[in-house]
Picture 1 (cartoon, rainbow, N blue to C red):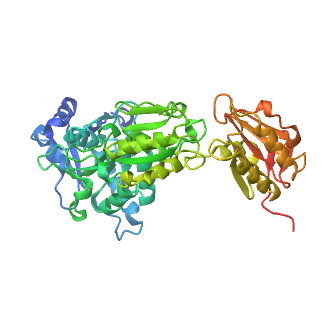
Picture 2: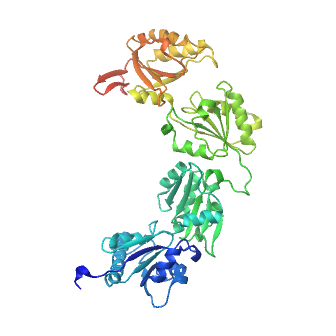
Picture 3: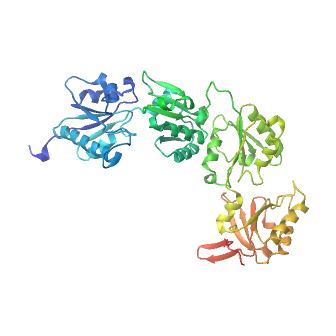
Amino acid sequence: MSSEERVTGKLWGVGIGPGDPELVTVKAARVIAEADVVAFHSARHGKSISRAVAAPYLREGQIEEHLVYPVTTETVDHPGGYQGAMDEFYEEASQRLAAHLDAGRSVALLAAGDPLFYSSYMHMHKRLAQRFEAEVIPGVTSISAASAALAMPLVEGEEILTVLPGTLPPGELTRRLRETDAAAILKLGRTYPAVRQALKDSGRIDETWYVERASTTRQKIDAADDVSDSDVPYFSIAIVPSPSNARRDDAAPQGELVVVGLGPGDQAWTTPEVQHELSLATDLVGYGPYIDRVPERPGQRRHSSDNRVEAERAAMALDLAKNGARVAVVSSGDPGVFAMAAAVLEVAAEEQWRGVPVRVLPGMTAANAVASRVGAPLGHDYAVLSLSDRLKPWDVVAQRISAVASADMAFAVYNPASKSRTWQVAAMRDLVLEHRSPDTPVIIGRDVAGEQESVRVVRLADLDPAEIDMRCLLIVGSSMTTVVENEHGTRVFTPRRYPG
């Protein structure tokens, strides 16, 4: 028989699950029993967990290939470093398996969990699958086993699960934990101190569980923050479960109030940190249209109210938190800019609420959003004003408009008009014209990042109050604000340098 006609063996990547031999699939058990060669990995101590799991399915007379890792940490004397040592090992191991395959023998390479999920099998697959027939048998992952051990859902509905290696830099791990609903952190062992710190820095430590050797007779479950750093083996996992199931049954309700900003309009402008807090909240409190922008979650209570009852809304939210709820008070834009943060903190200063922790999370402001649509009109010193005289007298508003106009700063104007307030825009325009040129650019942003977005640039003298409503935000330029028209549209900027 010529070399072109020779019959080669088949490579099987066999997932054997998380450790319990009864979690080996029927197909995996059959392939292990039928294979001519069974290959498995171990550390230098020689004890292979994979072989121990597969032992009930082995038969007499099979060839065993024991592949021993040269190193298990990144401390190594190899001239190519840790990666060089591992590449050399995988190359030698693939040659050992290739010799059997060339001889026509079938090879079952055992892989803990699933062969293509953080497994050494994939390194053999990359080196051998183009030369020999190869098939992968999926296995139960440690994540599924840990979730089952906790008897706790990982994710529900539209929640997002993120799988993270504990070897990530702590800052990156912290960021990703803040951004996701649920998480599974693998590759613990010596990385656990850094993982624990990332869980603390991201605010997730109290909802995280530690599962060691899931599904085996040595399985251990504990609260993540109660585990000693020195007692964490590699085969352990940290689970941050579904926000809908994060609270421990034995934990006393710990109420908290978080004031969040959704940003303007588009959900893409809501920060990951805010999205995470919204997913954890048991109760949402806010103005109806803002609450409606938050995706609904099973079991989450929504308390909508009119936009003119800020103190009452704050008191209700604080009362919910005082009684153990995790409350998110929702604002559009940034909660600290003409929004709910000040109202909540003012009410929270009363003696009856002093025990309620209050946090504020920032959001993209409407002023910054509108500015971005035309360029950088707020590129130098600027002010932010509200034309509403509902909470302060018009005399104060007018005094501040004149002061900002005379100081030659660009300024953003919130709450320019409403159904009951129709004259303030004209009054503001006239006050500014006492100090600014009629050609001063004014940006009119309406429903920015919303379905009816429009942004226009007009001269100050041409500002028409009839075109302005409560969904608008205005930006009035300084004497230095420049308008540039070109094939790409209108661009407005206020230079950072000032004459003289």
